[in-house]
Image (cartoon, rainbow, N blue to C red):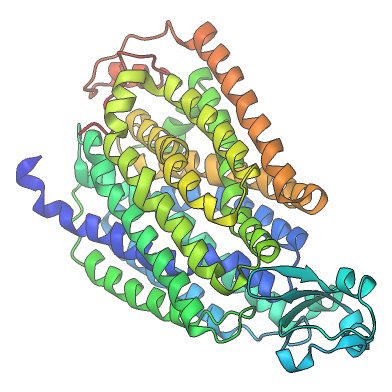
Length: 506
């Protein structure tokens, strides 16, 4: 592999610049929707519908890439360009001024504030330097002759039904949906192309390529959040223009890098669908895919509602003035901390533990992560939690899933298999997670919802451990390097310690 390091620079650069651009805007898309007045349930519905499309598009697009192998590069570049454009077009979404009110300190007067009919139609909080107070609570306890101290007031409409008939809601939904579809499909195609470039026996080096994406996403998220806070003069209404501009710039650089990709010729499958179907109906693969869905279920709640949860906590602690910086630091801690470490060393972990025990470990880590997030004493404590827990959850689970998909793929079906596995993870898993997550958050709030998810992850950990020990541990005959048709039959074995394929060792 040493002599081929230069040929891998474009794929490293692609991961870095693409993920940096996405990091600038993607983590804030949901809270941008919240600022537009879209409720938790509506966001949950959107994020639960999208994975249906992921579930369909990922394997279909993967099949398309495998079938038209001579045009892989062109198709890939068009996909990346479209994805960036859709997110950039979020800048054109019209802001519904009636859904939010931001009132200057000159409006903070005694009884006139509590008797304001416009404010009565809104749910308002008083934003002060170190605290936030619900206006309704303040008015109930306020002596009508008392004058409020200097403050800002942030309000959201209590009844937002009219919003869902507006251009604001539908343009946001359209561009966020198309951008999210492009991003998710691009991720699975990127991994398939990466494995093709690494070639036979190159799976051990996957983590060394993908880690650049983690670094880029963390840098982009922090940069985007920091610039939005600095650019926004209002404490409560954020201007996402600088984040969108940087997303466009990094996206353009990524296209240049991808134009330099030199994709190798790979053996074309005679019957892609037949070979893939024969593989996925094996009990070992079916079990693996089911637990990939459970991983997606866990990831979906963190990806959709963690930043939402932080905004709720920030309101309670009076930290709305620096909320985007906090959110950016949180994502930077996730990606620049444990995620990088685990991507680099995931191969050694997988070689030592095997696929089965790795997934069990991941579910245990998810249970701990959810539990810690439910007991945050301050919003700032989310940073160390995410720094240490993103690695053993997302990074290790992701590497196990895509690496195993590459290891079991028949020749010429890599993109299709990646699409199927990714469709189970962030397709079907996100469908279930989006529906339940929005309902849980609306009914129980963020704190109790994280506790519920912690219990679910612990249950998955125990069930997976039992299934692995009882049914899959003994089915183990497989070599490290697999090339023949007979060896292909052994690829599907859900391997225990000592016999796992090295997929990301370094």
